[in-house]
Image 1: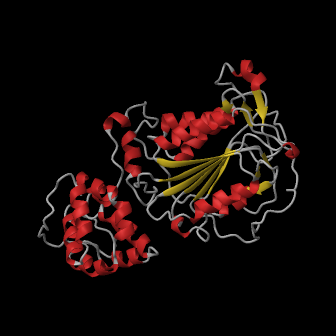
Image 2: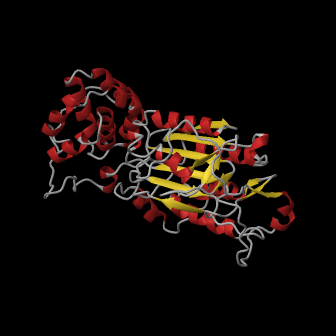
Image 3: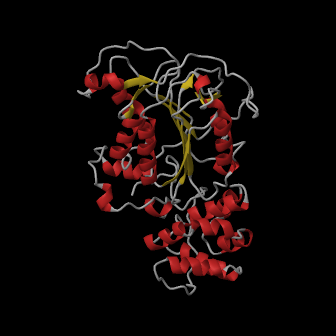
Length: 420
């Protein structure tokens, strides 16, 4: 499919997902050779009509040069001419008249995809301006291999919506006196860095500051209740004090400003497939800057990549707090003993569970500072897990006491950020 037509589909996706009546489209799409019966059935199994519409618009990009004009013609034939005109106008002045074409010839051999299409036609991929692609030195020596991987939808999550999803940043700096938790100086620096970074990566960023545990729960629930059908992913960042908690799948907990703890496991499961259907099959990412406990790791000697670490040590603090059971109970039900499989979820921790996480009062936390730097340098060319390895390596080389970030990964595919 021509790039102008791909851009038109992406630009109009939100409107199409909201207004498209998919039921009348299936038979003509099959009759005119755009999709096979097996493909139609796969689209129909995507979920709600909105989910079906979203997947249909995505898959249209893979169906060759004639799929777009055929789709416009079918929209007009089924009384949805306003959407056809919307797409025509978005296609940079391309002709809006129906184009008579022959059905596509498919040589499936028992498979459900068009083998005659090129790799670029079969798998949609966001197009990146060449000046942006080389703004920083490519991290991977074989750029063509990376590009080829990004085009493989069986191995890589599709990120095409713009914005690609919501990013909620919960930044707790000031804690109540009776919580016995100190002010987290430097956390606002972390928040500002991540707000700027994730906006540049095409997220719609929401920031909430100094929330009690009950308020944190409410914000998370409100985000999970939103309709994410037209979006491709969701991201949550938590900057707070942390502690150890009992868990089944995801360890650790974070504190509200009132000193009440919320298990990470509970936070994550607000967004699983059972509680947030519109995010099913889509990546859900969590970045947590908080201590996992109060233990300092003496570690082993490694060569530091930061010569100024010794001079800055006076301003370094720990987000450590002793393990303690949450005082009082929240109004919300706690995590149950049996949870749905956490597919398409990644939780990145600033430190190994049970150990402290270091934060510099002047420049922010080691973890966020490093994460922001790595994203800025490598997000255009490397997948998320590879970048998190870089973060772990860089943080582990800092300071007298050792800190090493880690993650619990239940993603099914590689995740590449969208880059301008």
